[in-house]
Length: 158
Length: 121
Image (cartoon, rainbow over all chains, first blue to last red; front, top):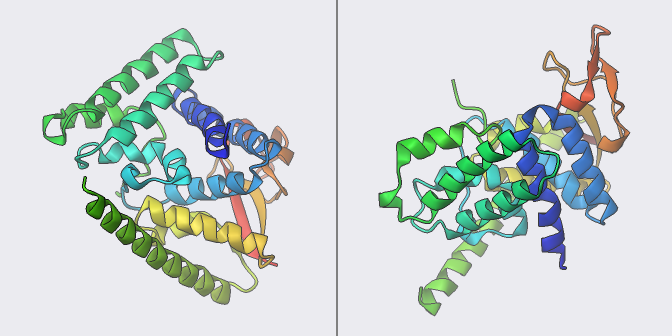
């Protein structure tokens, strides 16, 4: 397994937990830092925590285009990537990221069945929408579904 | 997409990344000159970041400066009242299960965000 796959394997469950169990952010970040560091990704863990702090404090809603994503972009920006669904004509990479996140949630053993079902339902809808041409997406419903997922959006301006 | 278009897109991406890198270096350098004795809470950089790519570039630049020995990084916890804890830790795994805020009230760190804080070496 290459470094990209290893980091993805660690980070995706982290974001899955942030959706399903947003309250335990401190514990989750500790676990993420420990796991990344133990597997030789201390630098990536430092970058991830800094990025998370900066990104969460940004005043304006942002998006990132995953079509040109590098490893770090794609793994760190899952929570922001959904914002370009209504803008990007080519959202296959986003759909792929969401599908990977879905698989991570399915594999999460500590997740309550009810929470798992709810998260999977939302992700499934979003992933299917991402595969459609932009003109065919249900923007308002999509936006509502996305906003219902905690921590995927940075703070909105007042 | 034609091969020519793909090459053009790659060249455009490389140029944009180089410009972002230069902007990031300038931002961090400006901060270093204006905060000689202070600490940097990266959340303040959110105000000067206009995209996730900016935020990522800043994060990478901070890691570069730590690796170069120009900055030190420690980790602090956001207290329930939104302030940063007085206690600093060399890494997040050293943060205890309980801490006290500025008014000596105990809180559970499992539910509190962790922020890397930088200062000049």
